[in-house]
Structures are given as C-alpha cells and as structure tokens.
Amino acid sequence: MTPNPEIVAAATEAADIAGRVILPFFRRPLDVEGKSDESPVTAADRGAELAIREFLGKRFPDHGIWGEEFGADRADAEWVWLLDPIDGTRAFITGRPLFTTLISLLHRGRPVLGIIDQPATRERWLGVAGQPTTFTGPFGGTAGCRPCGRLAEAELSCTSPEIFTPADLPRFEKLRAACKRVTWGGDAYGYGLLALGAIDVVAESTLKPWDWAALGPVIQGAGGSLTDWQGRELTLDSPGDVIALGDKALLPEALRLLA
Image 1 (cartoon, rainbow, N blue to C red):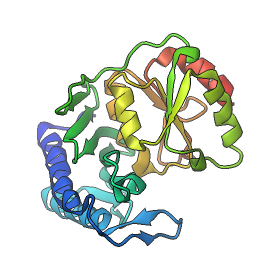
Image 2 (spheres, helix red, strand yellow):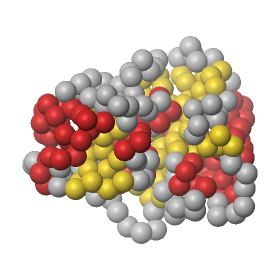
Image 3 (cartoon, rainbow, N blue to C red):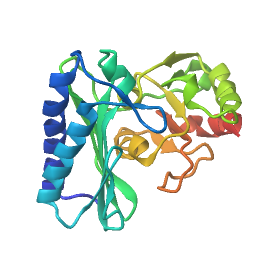
C-alpha cells in the first residue's frame, strides 16, 4: 500500500524536526554514554527520537511508533513508524557528516516509506512504495542505481568489519575478495550512495529493523534490491544480514559467495 500525501509530508517534516534537534550538538562537546550492547548514545539521539515521537504521535494517534532509543509503542498497529534518530552515532561523535536519521513507515510489517536524512549536508533520500526515489542535496546527484555487470567491477561498502559475527565474517570476506574494492565507513549513508549510483554493493550483518527498514523503499525506488543473505525479503523476524545491490543481476553471484 502506498502512503497518502499527508503521511509523506509528515515524514519529511519529522526529518526536519530531527535535524533541528541534532545539529546544535554536532561537533560540540557532549557526553557519550555506552548502552548495554556497548554502542554509544548521546543527548542528540534521545532528543531527536523524543521530538519525532511527539510529533508523529499527535499527528497519527492510531499509528504505532518503534524507536531504537525508547522502544515500541503499539507495535501491533496496522501502521508503525520505525525510527533511528542517529544511525552512525560513532561518526556523529567524531565529527564526520556520515551519520543519518532514518525514518520508516511499516504497513502490516512491511516498509512502505523510507527516509535517509543527513542534516549537516542537507541531503535527503525519500522512498515511497510504488514511486521512484527522490533525492535532494546541494552537491548534485540524481536518484538511480547504476548498471554493474560483474562483481569484479563493483564498488563494495561496509560500515566496519567489526559488524560481523565470527560466522559471518568469512562469508563477507569471500564477497569482498570478488569485488573491485571495499570502502569502510558510512553506515546508512552508504546505502544512500548506492541509490545515487556511486556504490554497487553494501553487505552487512547484525542489523536491527530500525537500521534497514528505511533503506528498502529508497533502494528499491532507485532500481536496486535489498534482501537478506539468502535473497529473501527482509522482515521484522529477519536475522539481520543484509545485502543491497544497485544492479539486481549481481544477486545470484553475490548469494553464492555469501552462502
């Protein structure tokens, strides 16, 4: 189901709200706390999520909201917003403009809207089910994945080798060896670059739903694919291994290496 224009407009306004909370903290002294999984969190993460939740909760009181920092509220609703206020907190706290805000809307558990927003560079990707992805930003770029006939010609991106479990890392290494080169870092920003045709493959594991839900509508609307490492559609029950491809023709070869 395609979200109506009111919902799309509210999603973009929510991204604006998050940016206004986040930017005053960027490249400023701030306290960094460690969560139970040892990932960092700041007042910017928490403040941005609270602001989005308040806005969307008032606008759509019958919708559920599920965020990384404050958990789920009515996660069994027909429509559920999935939020990652700062994807790439490590980049954020070290002053690199590669963090993003991720906002997704699920309809009966399937992502039908996704936003990747980089407030410091004013870049935004918007994907809506059944529609082409749109991109806005001051540096140029047009949404649309590029053709890439072979993995040997492919640019691969990944946040960090530390993202993989001991079982998954050897599988990723086979894929990495088959690609032209790998670039580390980027978190969700790398998936946005894939949707601009600058990257061909992103492969990661241990992702949570709020990490990948916004990416699907963006990448699919740009002509690419986002699946698990067995080529299956991602669901809320998926284990967290994700592969994004700008050229869907690469999928059989990539899955063979990741098997």
